Image (tube, rainbow, N blue to C red; front, side):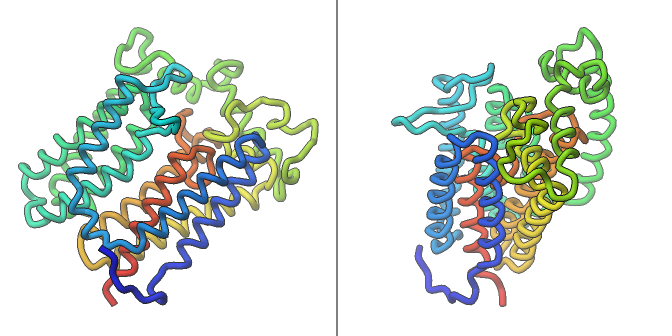
Length: 367
């Protein structure tokens, strides 16, 4: 499994970018809730170690265990359903031997690796409805288990990742056009239905989040409270921010006007304390990491490597866009972490594992 690699082929640029973003996250978490900072540092050390180890193993050999990965993924998600830890009305966490983690986060990487191998094995049949249908059937069990936790935001993110995987895998344009032709009007119809008072398609709290986004004035002291205060915090930071771990009384963070600032709304903390410059730095780093992964995908030795690198790029890019869009009230409130920045050990370690595979794809790239 271990191969001889040249140090000059190691993508140190990608590592520096990811570590830089993680350091910003650790600083922001320390300001948001100091007691969690040491745990995030421990997660970073573990993730970095796993990234380096995985980067030295031939991904082509590891991908031969794709069915084991798929079975493990389903098994973990079923365990969440049967014996998962419940918090805030959601059952998303597992506690095994004293270690608590979130299988829906590991599912992103496991599904990416599984489909990378599966699609490469059937790459000459990607214009076949049989293979596309089989991909969809294999995708349905894990996404259904995640959605029922309930975890709509992660379900949306993984669905987007699945679409990217199929696109990079070479699905025919005729199927893409057909899917878009169905999806766009279906989205409009569903959105219209979920806004009705007696709708049964989504939970009432999810409907209220959409309504609060559309009519923030009517929900200013309820569902729109978080996003409104997040926008105020980001705007109050102005160009250079109020300073790291500011003790200003006027700070939105210090006034506890944002709940869970260390996770879903960590960008509000960065905007308030580091200003427009700090917020832009996070966005630029996310773009550069995604772009570097895409460059690796373009030079991969095979389709599986291309899917892995492009999948990690889309995971980091789209998840970053969604989180920042929520913090700036561009889209309805949905709980999804900011890659490498938000507090969450499972998310952080999973992302570094994904980067480990990208680094190995880079080591084996075509010259």
